[in-house]
Length: 93
Image 1 (cartoon, one colour):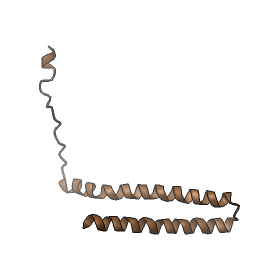
Image 2 (cartoon, helix red, strand yellow):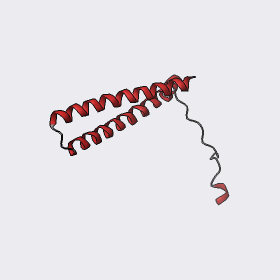
Image 3 (cartoon, one colour):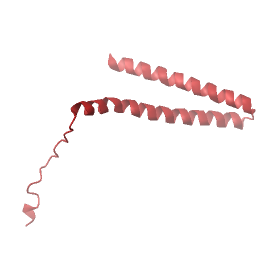
Image 4 (cartoon, one colour):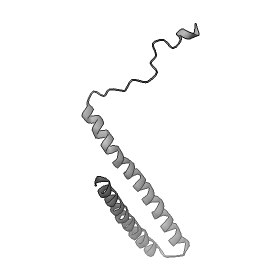
């Protein structure tokens, strides 16, 4: 009988219980930081690669390319830090 097929199955799923609620709370809080780290690394790698590609395409020598890539990586790191700092401060307020 098709009417009996759904017997015993609840309409809403039961929430999963974690043996250590403190661990769940910790994971939720740290998940944002992992997301920010992954996106920051991705942004840093792509922007540095494109900067180096543009400099090499312009015909600069190896020393100037290396200096440009290091300077770009440092500037990108400072920019990401400042942006994340301001975002965190404004979110806390």
